Image (cartoon, rainbow over all chains, first blue to last red; front, side, top):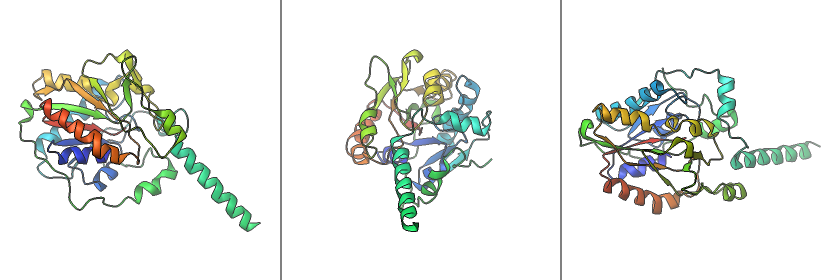
Length: 119
Length: 166
């Protein structure tokens, strides 16, 4: 996704990126970044919470209006209103993603190799 | 408060994310020349949103068969998309809340309000949905989808794009 933002910006269209992972947006040296401490899939907040969604949208507009130099970052002062454990569980896909499965298989193979050497 | 980028990330992903170094020598920057009160704004999400009955879902079966591949195509989402037709095809997030309220990923309602209040010039007629969380197919994006999208944005008179990674 930071690739999309960067490449579109380079075609001459200003962008602002609203992201749960501002660290990565900074690593791609994006122009304008709004950081939100929300679970994945929820860049603008809770479902059926127009006030929260509006606050994040306004921040994006404000940054478009006021940022005068690249790599301007604004972090939202909004705490997610649900406990961490529930939030973490709820954003997960219904099946482990293919890349997660691949990682797990790799790790399992490594552990088996290690166990084999140890044996 | 400083946002903790890793708060909801699976612990096993964290070292990979943290080890990402600076990817470019120069930052990307285009100045917004249009006053915000006159600007046309478009929105883009990478949550894999599509419209049931009108659009093909993103190709998840191919990704399941080949985890190193991700569907590089995008869908156009009109500003008046009916909520009951909003669907999510994405193997890396749970799309349930977006299927209940698209505004968590593509805040059409908030930007329509900002338009009606005169805070922005106009909310564009069409918005865009990609499927993110992919480290693949970026050659497709750079060579095909991004130039096409940039052309569409310019044709639609879009002054600025708001992107929300999923």
